[in-house]
Image 1 (cartoon, one colour):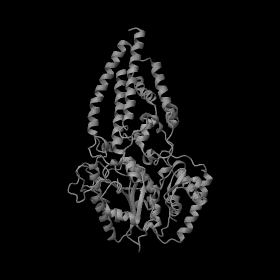
Image 2: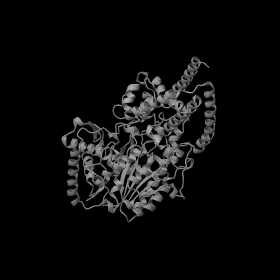
Image 3: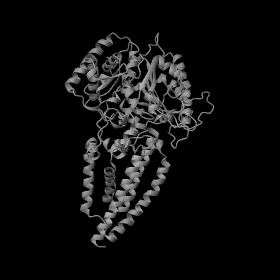
Image 4: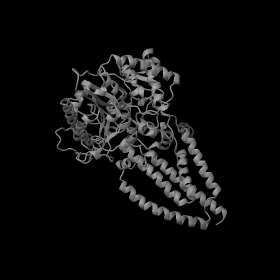
Length: 613
């Protein structure tokens, strides 16, 4: 074979690899296309650039293996798995795969909850021997016809790709602007699917490789943090002298009810959970959540730490538990107010999801109870989730053992098979014209019968919570219950316009079994999760760490949400330029402390957030 023929064959092989890269660029971006119409002039033109980046994946494997067939098989296998993972995640969570999630590939428990590991192992057991055989045969073929790439070209290709990857990793937002003319979204992203479609999956993936989680506030300095810390330490020292209650002498349950959502905007004969709704109206209200069908760990993080997700540069695609909390210089959370030996968590599944085991360990939670501690658990039909009825009974048994328990319920966070709970006394009536009357291809779609099954499950949750509070009332212990939902169910995706703002609200309430009167909540349209624990501390004359004097003052002033350059004041959005000096100072103090706490050196120290003096 002469030199010209070799060049033609190698060129043909490179072209074949590029065609596959082009195909996968199209397939990846098609994952979220359906059901989210975007005008053509808003869609980012990216196919050639995206295909070029994916082509480098094939070239990298080719350079390492020196085999066209191996690069063809491995490249397609890797991109095919990425495509499949995007489909699965989009169906279950309404989002696509992000770079940080590659670090979760070793998490077998989490993978097992998403895909069949048996199928994966069977596929690998077949693919690996075939791949080895192909590698041996292709090398013999390449040597015979002298089609191997020159060593210099292979090394140059590998170095070029590695250096390019480092440049992209160091500033992925800038790389996305240069390569795809893709600018960061302005403000908050409420509909991830639409953003991905506008951007294209490959540019969107690149843009979020090295996210900057929070912009450094303009007034930030060590001196300023010292001033703020000293100010609230003095306020706490004086305030605690006049306060006669210590929450550490009571027992507190922080109860996250996954997918708890119950609004008349979709249910004609609601509420599906009348008891919870009554408590919400009396002792709680609506909590703000940016998420639909997912985002549980983000809301939990915000409740436990009082860190506003709205301070993130990309609020809906930042996951603190997996991306930065363990790397941050702080161990602080509301649970840290209590002695470490008296902190516990109950999860009716596994702590492997969203790195909770590592996060809880950093928070000093040494007692982690999961489904392995519940061998007699009663489960939901079809989905196999542990019933809320059982979970609340289990929780009641554990209350005397710990001072604070962070509990998650998963009964309602699953698929909602049609005709689930046929013997339920509650027959939900879904408003017509919102959910599809025909079955959808996806188990996480918006089929009306899925909604019916969901609200039947919710009625069972309602009964379980009523039983929990009945048990609290008969207890001699002083018990506080902070209960909240994290997001609307998955079948609400794509129905945001039909339902309106309710899709981004979840119920919450704070109930105490002690005190002469239950103080009622100041009703607002929606409250950020950062204020749930400060609201609990506002319910009585509790001593507090310095940080919570800031938080309760913000709450008392009517601040309900805090973003990077805006707040919600008594339910109305206000930008910084429109704030009076007193509120602006409080908000600025909060933002500066948030940056110091999680993204600098935690100069304020964990005592500022957790120690009562």
